[in-house]
Length: 134
Image (cartoon, rainbow, N blue to C red):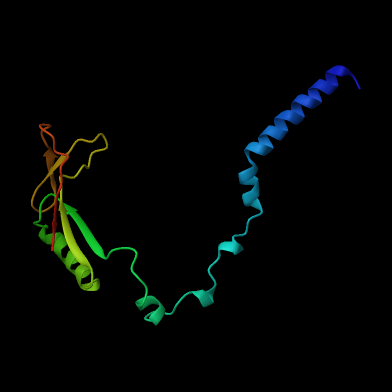
C-alpha cells in the first residue's frame, strides 16, 4: 500500500472514531427502550386508595394567581371561582405585579377589565412584587 493511501485511511478512521465517540450518547439512545424506568400498572395506586391519601405531600397545595392588583376583572372571575371550587383544599394567593407583555420587556398598562391601554412610562424600579395570601 502506498504511503499516501495509508495516511488518508488513518486520517479518515480518526475522524470517524471521533464522531462516533462524540455521538455515542445519541447512538446509545437508538437501542434504549426505557423498560428499566417504566412504572408497572401494579405500582400505580388506585384513586382514593390509602396509598395516595397516606403519603406526605411533597408539592404544596397553593394556587398562585398573578395580576396587577387584587381586583380580578369580572370576565376572569368565573374561571377563577371554578378553579377555587375544584381545588377546595388548596391555599389561594394573588401575586400582585406589573405584567410584562412585550417581547422587548416594555411593560403594558392594563385597565380594570384586563385590556391593554398602551405602554407604561419607564420610570423608577418596578421589579418589586407584593404577595398577598389568605
